[in-house]
Structures are given as C-alpha cells and as structure tokens.
Length: 272
Ligand SMILES: C[S@@+](CC[C@H](N)C(=O)[O-])C[C@H]1O[C@@H](n2cnc3c(N)ncnc32)[C@H](O)[C@@H]1O
Image 1 (cartoon, rainbow, N blue to C red):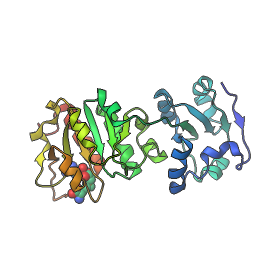
Image 2: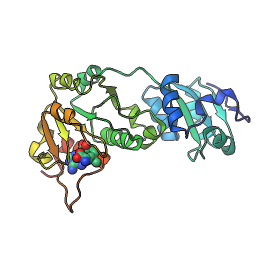
Image 3: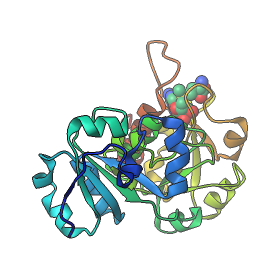
Image 4: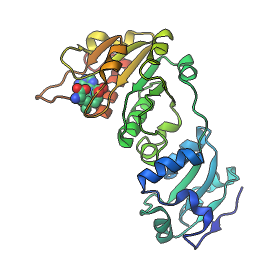
C-alpha cells in the first residue's frame, strides 16, 4: 500500500505516463512502446485491475482518494494527488472523471491461444476508429462473444478512448492480432469456426436465414466504415450475411451492426 503523494509541479517526471494525453499520434506511438495504457474513471480502473492488469500509478484529484481507498490499499503503485488545474496542464484536458490510472500492458496472446476455448469470435478488419473498437468490445462482452481477432491495421483496443468507450470491456474480452492477413483466417476455419462476413451487400443472405446461433463455432467478420470488408477478406469467408435494413438506408455503423449480429448469435433473434 502506498501513501498518496501530493504533486504540485506539472513538470514532475513522476507524471510522465500522463503527459499529452490529447495528442493522439504521440500517445499511439508512446503507449505500446512504453508498455502502458490509461484507464479513466473509477469503474474502468477497477475493471482493469480485476482483469489482472498491474497498476503502474494513479493520478487522482483529492476527492477521489477516499473513493479509491480500497484500490490504493491493495496496490503498491504510487498514487499522485493533484488539483484539477494541474491535471489539465499535464494531460491536456479537463479530467472530468477525476481519476486516471496508468496500467501495465501484458504480451498479447496468439490467435490460436484465444481460439482454443472460444465458440463465438469477432473478427475485425481495418476498424481503425477507437470509438468503434470500444463500442464493439462493450457489445461483445455484454452479448457473450468469447474473443476478438484483429487485422494488423485495426486500432489499438487499449488506446484511452477505446478503453473508455468499452467501459473497460477491452480488459476482459481476450483478443489477438492475426498477423498474416487475411491468410491467417484459414487457421480460424481449421479450428472449426464457420466464418461469416457481415456485409450490407444485396448478394448476402439474411442473418436469420443463416441461423448463426445454431452453429457450434462461429466467427463474425466486420469491416471498416467506408470501405467495408476487403475483397480478399470476403473471399476468405465461408458465407456473406446481411442484416436487412429499411427506409433506403445503405449500411449500419459497424458498432451497431456488431451489436445486432452478436445478439442474433446469442439468441437466434432478432428476426426468428
Ligand atoms: C458502414 S459499413 C461499410 C459499408 C461499406 N460501403 C460496405 O459495403 O461494406 C461497416 C461494416 O459494418 C457492417 N455492416 C454495416 N451494415 C451492415 C448490414 N446491414 N448487414 C451486415 N453488416 C453490416 C459490415 O461488416 C461493414 O463492413
């Protein structure tokens, strides 16, 4: 257990993990290189800890010290107490939630590691928007998906925005990168999964006809906003499936499509 330390100098090197949090490019490079990620807000910090991530430090405004007392007592990580104006100087934004934690990244498992025990898998190609990644992990956790596979160019699930939007679900749903893309999807099929490419295209079969909830092992492939799944990823799938839409809408946001498809896999709804 560490005694909270009051810090009054925004240039204090002990606050280095928290500097320039609004500089997306800088943080995207720095965080994986330095082996850290930022959890924001009480719930997310607790979830990251419960998922087994070690804490490097916490940055709290004074009123959060009592709220986080049990977390502080269980950890040896230093706790820096700063006033809100100083937190803003260091991070670059007003820290509404009053509590930040710098967490230690762990090595990612391989795709075969995560597939070993999974039955319902999400596969994302080129989803490079942190908000969409976070929303998809949140739905994946809530709707019983077991694991996530990412193409090499998907955004980092542990980037602060993704962690926040997912409400910490990125810490509890295991994920891996498929480095040889899309060739590596062959190993998903070999592990017994049926690969379903989600696309709004007219040529695809409706999700309810395909009945993914009856499949023993199923992998749902999602593409990026704008381009959707690439032709090569489509070719690697066993089948194309669509969520029927009305009012002339041509596609759903990928996060919304994911939630509908996860629910259909879990329950056989919405159309059956
Ligand atoms: C905004 S959409 C991409 C639209 C792109 N023009 C296309 O034709 O795929 C992003 C992703 O969400 C999923 N998606 C969106 N609407 C869908 C629908 N109605 N049925 C199935 N998947 C959908 C797909 O995985 C798609 O790659």
